[in-house]
Length: 195
Image (cartoon, rainbow, N blue to C red; front, side, top):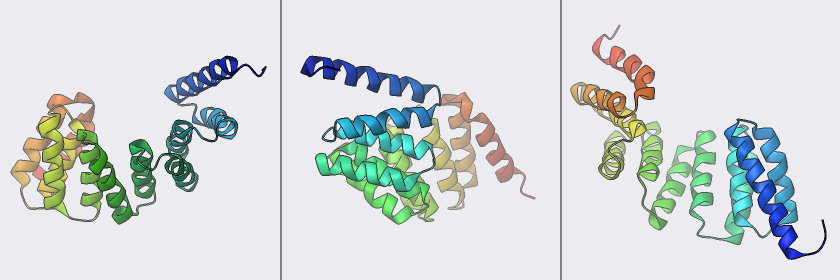
């Protein structure tokens, strides 16, 4: 590679896009290798660091992911992708209170149905079901086709004693996202036929 900045940018983009293709193919270790090299070559690029963090989560390495997200945040303290990544890294470690804090911080920067959905997951894990139900409702009011939010809504309602509301949420999950059917049907069976 010569010293022409345009060549550097072209090569950077080529490698970055290739890492994304590898991720789509589930080849996370190879994608990680490319992103690690890009992080070395371009240490001031927050995007490279937070992308690497998410790949490291796919590789079940939340400790490494934390370091990558932290580096992205040193570069850009309001990087919502890195902030959310910190939440997901804490969730991967089952540190739900820490995950909640990071998810709430991300919601302060930007509102998204997915952000409410992730927060609902942390709240369910901490057995704060009424708050989780409210977060699911926020997610679904913005995106009524979010099957994952309906699944979490079903759990939140079930653990608050609202079995009928849980079943309705499960049917809605299947209606909007048929790929939720296996999980939803298994949970519905547990609700309607407890043994």
